Length: 353
Figure 1 (tube, rainbow, N blue to C red):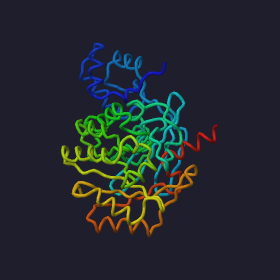
Figure 2: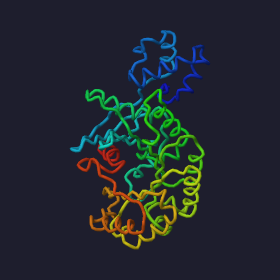
Figure 3: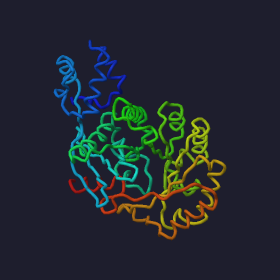
Figure 4: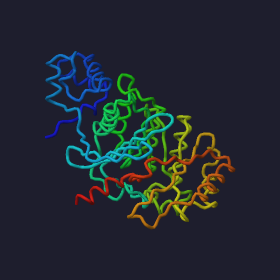
């Protein structure tokens, strides 16, 4: 049986585990320093950790559970990684360069069951959740890639927006966030971490009640139930009214801004009437809501959808602005490689199959 990755333990969990196995709690901080600051990939390299403790860790854990299967690099510096897990499954992780720093988009599940009709991630049904070590491992593999390039660069921002629905893997996703934002580890600031959900209302409430204190984005993509149900089957179970109730709970309790993601599909949801309906839906929540307009990356299997014209994107943006809604258009990264989330994995699996 494969050993678990030590990356999956929070600092407190590791301290408790070491104590249960006859070692001092403070050893956990030493181990974490070697893992996340010095970034060793072999327990034997932890010079100030007693040999008995190292042997214990080696018996129960491994450090890395991901191997690089394929990599694409774009002209703008975006790097798309396809990692192989211990069980042979493939997942995608993306490194993006921004003016404000280096952002990594991580995957939380092998496949996706949400079934958005425009999305490459859902082309392959979910086979399992990733554990915390596999999610943290994506950040560490990207950071090691940066270290090996010798540029003295550090992952500064994280978006949980890769393959899968993060809130459908809530416990492991939560541990992942606690691990990467821990000041004794990678120390990625909570305001530099964003989790995106397709709209699991009960989990939005649970997320609000947690102590994670990171940013929340909700994939809305349509301003009414009829249209949203047509392109996102999750809306049948969780209609917009239920989703808005959860969003209101988040806004009222956290007093933090929320991002509504809206992918623009030509002649489907990109007309002025849709923008006006979206503005009305935002309503008096305007001070705490930002709408992020997303240009569509075409997917061969979803040929019924096309990218909105630039004029339509601009008109949609202008309409929202005139209605007093804060909005932005997402900058595109890696346009010269398989840009859509899940696209690289799908193509590689077809090629190998």
